[in-house]
Image (cartoon, rainbow, N blue to C red; front, side, top):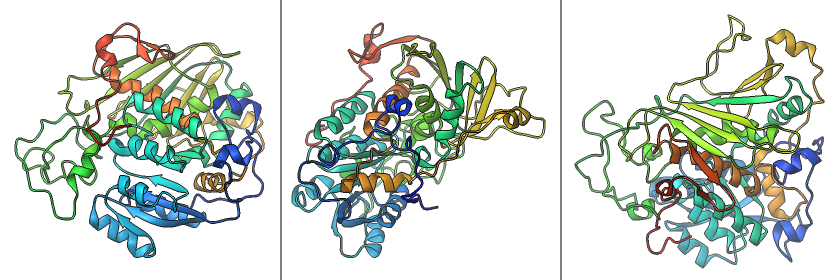
Amino acid sequence: MSQCGKRSGVSRREFLGGAAAAAAGLTVLPRHILGGEGNTPPSATLNVAKVGCGGMGGGDLDEVAKCGGNFVALCDVDENSLNGAAGKFPQAKRYFDFRKMLDEMEKDIDAVVVSTADVTHAVASIWAIKRGKHVYCQKPLTRTVKEARLISEAALKYKVATQMGNQGHGGGGLQPTAEFIRAGAIGTIKEVHTWSDRPKGWWPQDFAPPTYTDPAPKFLHWDLWIGPSTERAFVDKWREGPDKGKTVFHHHNWRGWWDYGAGAIGDMACHNMDPAFFALDLGAPTWVKATCPPFNKVSFPLWSVIEWEFPAKGDRPAVRVFWHDGGKQPPRPEELGPDSKMDSNGCMFVGEKGKMMGGGWAGFCRIIPESKMKEFKAPPKTVPIGHYKEWVEASKGAQIVPGSNFGYSGPMTEAILLGNVAVRFPGQELRWDAEKHEFANNPEANQLLHYEPRKGWEL
């Protein structure tokens, strides 16, 4: 379904500069803040470059084009994906290396859409931002905690329009969930549980690395695919074991590798935890702690349960937020009717007066049981402009702040990815100092906040 939406009938809360802005209403910025001095008016053409054209990248291409983006350049390390996209946009120049594309077409590009494996999200986005380009980047915004801080700071410094690809943020369900919470529908929130079925049935995790290698196919520029992270010989498919016949890295299964993906929490928490960050203005946590089975640290564990404590803020007391993946879920709430089941992805708010629960992707959380939902007076419905449309219009100079801009999604990603550090120290309460950007009680854990990029790929 297209996420372009409509321009009319938009709630004043639809476009946010961050969680704090949500409480006050719409943040409206002058055009020179959104797009840079001398930016063209909103009605003009937005020339867009695409980094990553396969998988979700294909959907991003179509949606941004529908919303008015004019693609002038396409980049992918996979020539098959690149050629497929070029069939839709034959006028666009083709590249394998986004660095070369940005150098050669810097004056011709207004905005960049990044839809690569997680390992390249930050470097491609920051390189574009530093050239004054507006950026849309798929979730998770980055692979590491430090990258999330750097990308937020870059977007603020260069004053460009940004958006992270958690489409549910602009889908219409997030706003009423927040309105219910703020109106006291279930009283003071004590804790929030979020969960996902990933990685079960989606990609392998906790595997032993292959002992063999394969020649990279001619259509794949393997060194560019690795990007800033650890060099590793190409392997095509698993030759034995439960994942026999499945690809090891490319196209999809990079998500399970520590050096290239961010695991289940990277894939789904930016969707399923979004209602908690938005409605409760969570900010940075005080500490994070994980439970998981033993794993080899080359890939992610088969499952994890992660807990954060977020400090009190304003009238809201401290709150604990939980993440469950790999088939783990919170206890089934007794308020849920016997004929209802918990979705494979979801979010549940636990308040002093009751519970609200919904599916994943920032969908609307309803009061349970349904009888209580019917008793509560719902806030007026809002008509969102659309996740992609708000970024395109902001990039053109409209006075709109996209809801999942990097000022909001960067800190959220940073907090979420602390969970991936915590699984390396199961059972330990890692105390987070957001100002110093370090764990106060575990120097070893601080080494996992980032890595040393390969030469030529520095942030």
